[in-house]
Length: 612
Image (tube, rainbow, N blue to C red):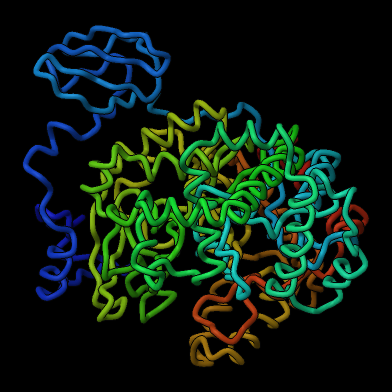
């Protein structure tokens, strides 16, 4: 029997179910603390909050004029006509109330073909010409390789910007913003104006000699050279026009980035007069530091040019993190919409008995509505732009998020509900406009109704060989199927025991817990002889994957080159997570024998989706 948690007027669930379907009550102190943080919405919120609807829907108002995005004014009488245009409009009721009207198709865009593709940690995919880290030119090479091999997409880690300070944030899942890109991914010699500057390319390429990706050294070198290019070239009229078209969001990002270079990566520690966008002191700061502000805007222009070239002609699925850094640019811009004193995480589960705290501040649901959903709209639109695909990390966060109080731990948290139907309709609208598919990362404990809502909105589910009990041939068609993810063992690491040994070294569990965990994963890899090589295990894993009728089949480059180390091992602090390069340079990937075997297997699976 399914139990539905009781949700109060603040959206807080009084209890939660764990992976074993056991119910846990939330402490009264936690509920009281979260209620105070959330606060009460204004009495007139329901009269001014945005209406999210679909063509043909009944509206909450009897009569109104709608000012459409294109300037046309349409009169509506209690409902939207079936041919009403999709988009972001303004509704003016007969009583004089003005509110946003978001009209969505209700379903995401989906391609017709069933395809396979590569999942790539871009920072790890170094070439001989990149400066210590995989960059957008390397993504272009991987995209070209994938197309030549018969692949239909490339899935990349989040490419969002972090603070441009000497100590670079390594995790792509804790960005400073979800609206702008990280300039560390620029291929410096291809930036406009680079031909007029001494790039000292040998010093840049030498950054790739290390065993790990040293982001601090890489950013220091790239920033110094990029700054010289900017002051020598400046982007000219093309950059000036582009900058003007981007408007206030770009100006806010560039301003925040400039201030961080002087006052640090957390806006809470800045001088008081700079802590809010739009103030007179901030305008003075921008006037006095216009060149540095311009530099950070120019970097985004260069990034857009290179990303466009890298993704041309193929679906590149970009990854949207669940949140952003509490001291970052998005938090600074939308500080009145964020919850202070809590962070997002996960309750204890079968994989982490202590729960998780991801460090990102959550958006307060009613304040998000009161902001016309603009923080969410901008994040989705910016990440989906121009690439043809979007992966939403922890898609369950559109329904509810686990809030962790600052003075407690993950076990002291509670779930807070979000307006999932509205958020999914916004995702569908942005997907439709960008002609981009959407994948929801629905791994782990998924409450009843989530996957049904995803399917209704055309959001693809995510199925892993390591997690699913069913034969891959029985997996759903409307899904992206994969063997593993960046947080889980690679095939080689699992098969050889190297991942188990590393977990022991890092102290992520007792020997017995780790042994049982490995054995449970090996049960998902049948048909491999005990004395088989790691390469044979990799091939068998992808033969199993190819049986899935799922619309997308995703293989990691890590598996395809036999890498035993996973990109990230959750719960570790000493391990160099997100800093492990692939052992094979990008130029040599097409000829790698194991990779070629994986390509053959997946091409056969796509051509003959139903196993004998």
